[in-house]
Image 1 (cartoon, rainbow, N blue to C red):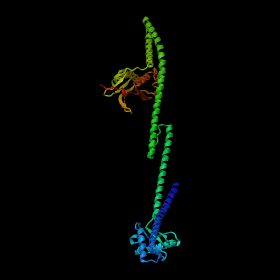
Image 2 (image 1 turned 120 degrees about the horizontal axis):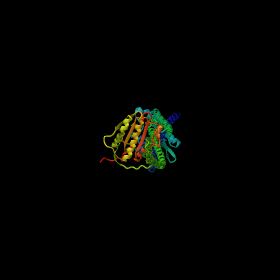
Image 3 (image 1 turned 45 degrees about the vertical axis):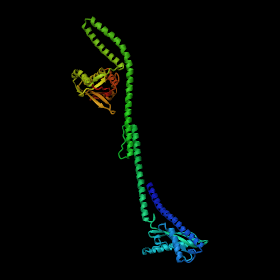
Amino acid sequence: MLVFVLFLAVLFATIATLRYTKSAVLSSEKRQLIQITQNLAREYEDRAEVLRQNNEPPPLSVPTTASSREVLGLLTRVVLQNVDGVNGGFYSKAEDTLLGYPEPNQGGFSENPAQENAAKDEEKAVFSASRSAVANRQSFERVLTSGSWIAVIEAVPIRDGYTIVGGAWSVKRLASLPGSNRFRAYLASVGLGTAALVSVLLTLLMIRNLQGGVQKIEGGLESLEQNLESRIDTENDPEEIQRIVQAINRLGETLKAKIAREKQIESDLRHAERLASLGRLVAGVAHEVRNPLATIRLRVQMCRRETNNPRVNDSCNIALEEIGRLNGMVNRLLNFSRPVQLRPERTDLRRLVEERMESFREQAVNNHVQLVVSLPVKEKILVIDKSHMAQVFDNIIQNAIEAMAEGGGTLSVNVASIETDKNASQVRVEFRDTGKGMNATAVSRVFDPFFTTKPFGTGLGLSICHELVTAHGGDIQVESEEGRGTSIRITIPARRAAAVG
């Protein structure tokens, strides 16, 4: 409905504009002609005044003669010589006739037989207008339409004192005016109206597309509030909408990454707080336990030396072994409670991994575990604490072999250089076993102190590994699936790498 109303409004406005354009052109021509006719009248009055001063009668005051016609023709040529397409002359009231036609090059009525009828109609209209101006004692105008042309006629009275003696007239023929061809005018109007209609339809289509895009963006934002992994489809949308949607999708990905990073930082902070609290507790307990253990060891050793009873001697040996095991646990607790002190040195990481795997070769064979080592050809020289990193590798290898002790399996290790998104080099060591694996809950707590899945484990091994790797500026991650094995990746930034020299 709105489109139809706009179409009609544009159509009517166009038609009205064309009509007003025709009227405006006619009004302009009339103003020009009235000025020219008044100039003719003034020119005559000035000439008449000169003749009276010379005691000669003005041309319109007496019956026309050859000399008076010559004077009137001269006046007409003087006024119309710089005006194109305008004919003019005078009217004698005394003789009720037109006088003073201009020369052929200035116009005059055509003698062409093909235009004879039109010329007669024009002459009659000029005569009628001149007579009316004289009779009414005021200017008179007339528009004569004939076929494809329009004649504009102006006439003004000429006074001799208080007496009207005649009139001056001018006429201009217009071959065509805007709006005079109605078919062409209506065709132009229809064209303009159609263009306006198309413009309106295109505008409405664009508005509809934009509204659809805005609704899609609103729906996408609502989905993004519920799930940061949701994405907005941009197919078949305007380019502007596509750019906005792509920016929103990138924002969702960025928010997801930041939230994941914040969760990781929060988890690391909680882990650090637990470690700090447990460290203080463990340090106190370890110190309190260590002294009684030393006394018990001494007494058992004295008892074993003073007895000759084999059964007592065997019991003492068993007690000493258990005391040693407890003393080792106390030492691990004390190491766990102390801040990590690194003694970095240039170390070939490739060789270190190979040595630690080889040291477990016999234990692996006894447990039917196959060791597979994939190492780079060139050395990987890093500035690290060799003994602490060896402790990390030993703990991981030991856990992997124990996880496959029942049915055997394969433990593979891979050392490789990687590039991060920020173009920073890192070295990654990955241990992968085919053991029994862990569930998601166990994986989430694997670095917690005293958490273990072993029947006789202390739960400190991977916690200590986490602390040592973090102290090197690296990262340790665990992936595991029940029944399919476990993968542990250790990443050390290459900023700690040293050139071989």
